[in-house]
Image (cartoon, rainbow over all chains, first blue to last red):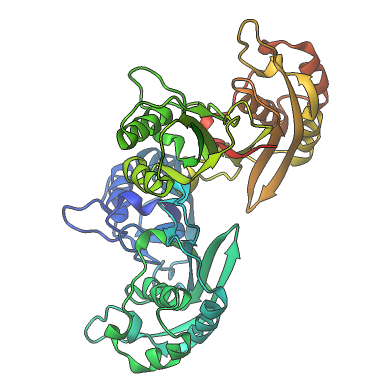
Length: 244
Length: 244
């Protein structure tokens, strides 16, 4: 028995998200289907980050268990032939027996890209949120700082009954890059729609609609209805996943 | 009578290049058609850079002459509604009477983007040439230097009978950026397929197929058949056009 780890990138534009969904085109359906086709049996894959429809991945991690021998070089080439160019299998390696892409992950890092320029940019339209107005970077930076630490992020998550929304944010900051704004966040894990809601709040502060000094109260309030804006999915990219 | 200047960006992926072509979908067909629809008459536009099929523009310049009054704000919004999101009209301004997007341009700057990483990147597949191997940046830099100056670029151009291939290259350099390679070139003007052929030669040197020290002789030889490789169009972006 061996555990195989796949490092994968994808353009989320044409997919209804990562996770399998009946009757929908998802990354997992494409990838698992291709693995099954090449290896001749169905696999049950585990994934580090279940990205939403339209969200991209630069470095997603997927794993599966198989008790036969696999030629990883050949599998990699065959998979890329089947799932490229929207999905790219960057590497396949054998991991230790207790490795699981989802449960072994120590942290995830996401980038959210914002185009504040007045004019739309056709070349980044699938990966940047075009807000078309200048934003107050200083006010947003101060809110991004507030996100750091262990918090109950109920105000920023679609809650699943019986599950905690406590997450530990290790890094959270804004930066300007080539006239665009980037928001970077690293946490042990994320609940559903968390990054997009955190960015939505940042945007409302950046455009002067919300007072940034309320960020601490909004987190403490644990009230989903207190955050009005959810940033669109196409600005978001799963950038990196860390393992111990 | 007034001259109108449009600053335009586009994703060249879905177009058969800039210039009008019967039965083909081109940027000019879309743009001129939209202007005609909004203003109610056919316009004859001039353009700074006639980009090839698949080539992008971050800052293309287009102009036309009209003797009626035009509400440029309204025209801009109407055009973006018709040609977006693949084409973006960033601004429209009234220029001096002797302005012509093509003939008034003093220089053009292009960027060519190369992905040397082994694995393909789905997010840049429409705008970077994925060569999938490391390239010798130092050797390429030395060749890029050789391109600078006034030369007859016949070895790098699809020659048009009776026209000169002499161009003045003002800047030409390679740089590494986030694991990608960028080639930047600024010249008074470019002949057909010139940037893609210059990049093709750089690539052959970078991968060790061609000796970079022959670059001077290849230019001097004025022999189109001496340059074997033409880089694919999708890595190329018209970045900027300068006017006096």
